[in-house]
Image (cartoon, rainbow, N blue to C red; front, side, top):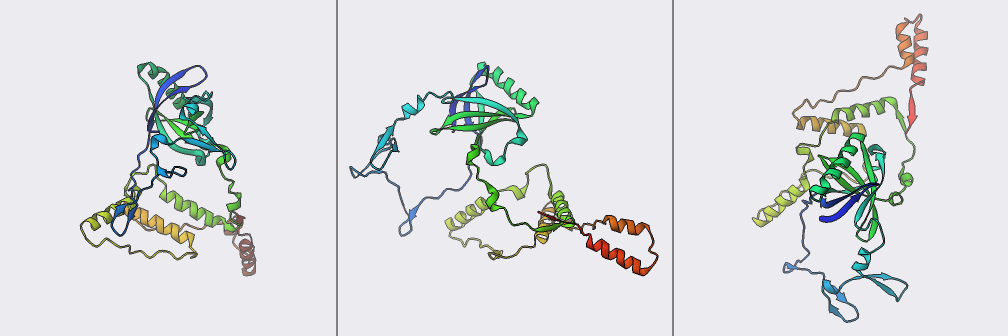
Length: 306
């Protein structure tokens, strides 16, 4: 979906638009080669009846119906399907953005109004979405099927996100781990460390594609017939038990150090239980009573399943 023409339709209006890709792929692409002589390995398309290579102009779509029957389907026939979404993005509903499961949201595309005539209804829809703090859910046809889409506003432009249908999201219940016991102190410590790493943006060196940079350096080194840089960190052994709290503290320290801040991660003060607070206010009359109180407080140590 690089730059296609659609119309954006709601109940009372139709806005002619262009659909433009909103993302760029900066991945490094490799060719398949024959290692003995570095010749390109090509994928050729052959007709199994005529036993010859065929061109793209000779290739069409066919639906397998039974073992020996194939029904041909022409591109023109698909374009002429009696669907209101064939060349239109039909808005079906509006919803609060927070109610959309992120797993359903896919790639994004910018919607560009087609000329000055489309500008006013386009801006009207954009401003209405902004003020309502809602997103629009729409349907449209693309690549041989009807799809679900989400419309939202980004920097004064309406963005269309491809969406998965609800039945395309797998039920995660089978992946849920068995119940474990966690104390309130452990959960509070994890929340404390999360707060230390909370930020408002994803700008900075830590949010760069280091893999692509490393591959570029590898290619440059080989081009210049130099020895490429080797990895120095030891990979973690499979199945190794990880101390989550230690790992979180290490991540916090590393992030703070990279930003030039104090990398020391201080221990979180232990919370006093209600029983302990009550004991502190009252001086114990006898040592034995103090011991009994301490035992009771320890027995009431809060635990909860997660």
